Image (cartoon, rainbow, N blue to C red; front, top):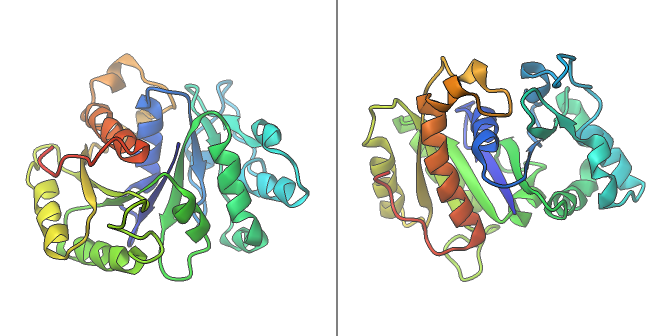
Length: 260
């Protein structure tokens, strides 16, 4: 299973969402950074021994290997484990490195799909001309992350309209698309309001729920749960959303509309 996570504008929390969902995911999972603007996981985390992650080992090294025809069985050589145990494929450190990946995006997507693990892929902000379009069209589901504001919802609506054709949104056999709202823990209306807006716009997209905006818990994300973090609103809300994301990507029927 490969799930691509993206934003329509700005930095609403895609990397944090992928990180926390990786922490609570119930099966073997890999977090991958394909954000063309550059990755953050290598900056946020260290390895289990407290050492910095290797900056050139990840997406860049895997893309170079893919151009040489290296098989999927070599993927583990490009994956690192962060403190706590979550395997990650770190992203580019400089945006210009994206230009060297070019035509191997479909190959990278297939490699992740064939690992035997679920893959949660941070695609960053997507817009017309994005180089990660092969990742979006090759995913089992595409999930947008947004925050509750008029501007954010407007940009999300327009981005979904743009993707309606390449993802065949609403058609039989289309790529399922969902939305996660990052909002205050007490905000029970945001997901419901967004669902109504998307329905009014004629977009057949599932609002999967909300993840609590919990800044105090974010620095504690380490790739594995600990007792203190387990009780945080961030992790508790992420567990509910993880179930909805897995249902969407597995094709297990339509996810219930907002109200989570």
